[in-house]
Length: 128
Image (cartoon, rainbow, N blue to C red; front, side, top):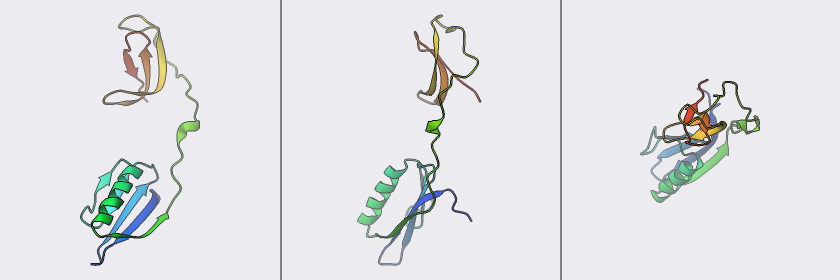
Protein backbone atom coordinates (compact mmCIF):
# COMPACT_ATOMS: atom_id res chain seq x y z
CA UNK A 1 0.00 0.00 0.00
CA UNK A 2 1.33 3.45 -0.88
CA UNK A 3 0.96 6.74 0.95
CA UNK A 4 1.58 8.99 -2.07
CA UNK A 5 -1.84 10.60 -1.61
CA UNK A 6 -1.27 11.59 2.05
CA UNK A 7 -0.06 15.09 2.93
CA UNK A 8 -0.10 14.95 6.74
CA UNK A 9 -0.92 12.36 9.43
CA UNK A 10 -2.04 12.72 13.04
CA UNK A 11 -1.77 9.70 15.39
CA UNK A 12 -3.83 9.57 18.57
CA UNK A 13 -4.10 7.00 21.38
CA UNK A 14 -6.09 6.54 24.56
CA UNK A 15 -5.33 4.84 27.90
CA UNK A 16 -7.13 1.66 26.80
CA UNK A 17 -4.75 1.18 23.87
CA UNK A 18 -7.13 2.48 21.23
CA UNK A 19 -5.42 4.14 18.29
CA UNK A 20 -6.69 6.54 15.65
CA UNK A 21 -4.98 7.85 12.55
CA UNK A 22 -6.23 10.97 10.73
CA UNK A 23 -4.83 11.51 7.23
CA UNK A 24 -5.11 14.75 5.26
CA UNK A 25 -4.65 14.00 1.56
CA UNK A 26 -2.37 15.96 -0.75
CA UNK A 27 -5.37 17.65 -2.40
CA UNK A 28 -5.86 19.54 0.88
CA UNK A 29 -9.53 18.58 1.00
CA UNK A 30 -9.97 14.87 1.66
CA UNK A 31 -9.57 13.51 5.18
CA UNK A 32 -9.72 9.85 6.22
CA UNK A 33 -9.97 8.35 9.71
CA UNK A 34 -8.57 4.90 10.50
CA UNK A 35 -9.41 3.29 13.84
CA UNK A 36 -11.57 4.42 16.72
CA UNK A 37 -15.31 5.01 16.64
CA UNK A 38 -15.20 6.68 13.20
CA UNK A 39 -13.10 4.03 11.43
CA UNK A 40 -13.37 4.53 7.68
CA UNK A 41 -14.89 8.02 7.99
CA UNK A 42 -14.20 10.26 4.98
CA UNK A 43 -14.61 14.02 4.92
CA UNK A 44 -13.94 16.63 2.23
CA UNK A 45 -13.54 19.73 4.41
CA UNK A 46 -9.75 19.54 4.73
CA UNK A 47 -8.07 21.18 7.73
CA UNK A 48 -11.46 22.20 9.17
CA UNK A 49 -12.42 18.53 9.46
CA UNK A 50 -9.02 17.64 10.95
CA UNK A 51 -9.36 20.34 13.63
CA UNK A 52 -12.88 19.19 14.51
CA UNK A 53 -11.84 15.53 14.68
CA UNK A 54 -8.82 16.33 16.87
CA UNK A 55 -11.03 18.31 19.28
CA UNK A 56 -13.62 15.52 19.31
CA UNK A 57 -11.10 12.77 20.07
CA UNK A 58 -9.23 14.85 22.66
CA UNK A 59 -12.53 15.43 24.49
CA UNK A 60 -13.17 11.67 24.32
CA UNK A 61 -9.89 10.91 26.13
CA UNK A 62 -7.48 10.46 23.23
CA UNK A 63 -4.14 12.26 23.21
CA UNK A 64 -2.07 13.33 20.23
CA UNK A 65 0.92 10.99 20.10
CA UNK A 66 2.50 12.31 16.94
CA UNK A 67 1.77 14.35 13.83
CA UNK A 68 4.02 14.58 10.83
CA UNK A 69 4.10 15.61 7.18
CA UNK A 70 4.14 12.73 4.70
CA UNK A 71 4.19 14.38 1.26
CA UNK A 72 4.08 17.90 -0.07
CA UNK A 73 0.63 19.26 -0.89
CA UNK A 74 -0.54 18.88 -4.46
CA UNK A 75 0.43 21.95 -6.48
CA UNK A 76 -2.41 24.28 -7.26
CA UNK A 77 -2.91 25.25 -10.86
CA UNK A 78 -3.32 28.91 -9.89
CA UNK A 79 -0.31 29.83 -12.02
CA UNK A 80 -2.09 28.83 -15.22
CA UNK A 81 -3.43 31.82 -17.12
CA UNK A 82 -7.18 32.10 -17.54
CA UNK A 83 -7.03 32.13 -21.32
CA UNK A 84 -10.38 32.47 -23.03
CA UNK A 85 -10.97 29.24 -24.99
CA UNK A 86 -12.25 28.97 -28.55
CA UNK A 87 -15.97 28.57 -29.18
CA UNK A 88 -17.29 31.83 -27.71
CA UNK A 89 -20.95 32.33 -28.66
CA UNK A 90 -21.63 35.37 -30.88
CA UNK A 91 -24.24 36.60 -28.39
CA UNK A 92 -26.52 35.27 -25.66
CA UNK A 93 -29.11 32.93 -27.22
CA UNK A 94 -31.68 34.13 -24.66
CA UNK A 95 -31.45 37.93 -24.87
CA UNK A 96 -28.76 38.77 -27.45
CA UNK A 97 -26.40 40.54 -25.00
CA UNK A 98 -22.61 40.05 -25.15
CA UNK A 99 -21.13 36.92 -23.57
CA UNK A 100 -18.06 36.80 -21.30
CA UNK A 101 -15.82 33.97 -20.15
CA UNK A 102 -15.66 33.01 -16.43
CA UNK A 103 -12.89 30.45 -15.71
CA UNK A 104 -14.46 29.39 -12.40
CA UNK A 105 -18.20 30.01 -12.42
CA UNK A 106 -20.14 28.52 -9.48
CA UNK A 107 -23.82 27.65 -9.57
CA UNK A 108 -25.98 25.61 -7.21
CA UNK A 109 -24.86 22.26 -8.61
CA UNK A 110 -21.76 22.84 -10.67
CA UNK A 111 -18.45 24.68 -10.82
CA UNK A 112 -16.09 25.28 -13.71
CA UNK A 113 -15.34 27.36 -16.80
CA UNK A 114 -18.41 28.85 -18.47
CA UNK A 115 -19.69 31.43 -20.95
CA UNK A 116 -22.03 33.89 -19.21
CA UNK A 117 -24.38 36.54 -20.57
CA UNK A 118 -23.62 40.07 -19.37
CA UNK A 119 -27.35 40.84 -19.37
CA UNK A 120 -29.63 38.02 -18.27
CA UNK A 121 -26.73 35.91 -16.84
CA UNK A 122 -27.60 32.95 -19.05
CA UNK A 123 -24.75 30.46 -18.74
CA UNK A 124 -23.25 27.54 -20.59
CA UNK A 125 -20.52 25.41 -18.99
CA UNK A 126 -17.63 24.35 -21.20
CA UNK A 127 -17.25 20.64 -21.74
CA UNK A 128 -13.76 19.16 -21.83
